[in-house]
Length: 65
Image (cartoon, rainbow, N blue to C red; front, side, top):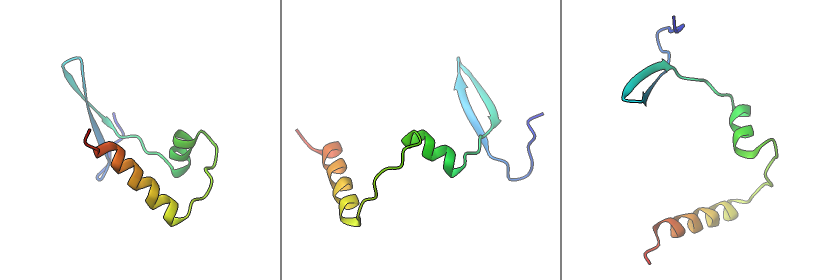
């Protein structure tokens, strides 16, 4: 009924006090890119720019204040 084979991925979803099991969706790189960037290609960043962005995000998330 679900089209399952050995090695198939499943999702367990809790809804309205019930648990539903369904075959997990598979997404391509293109699907994920469209979801994240809406079809726009972000500008390339250097390693230093990426590291600084990560530092800022971590500081913001874990800053005590």
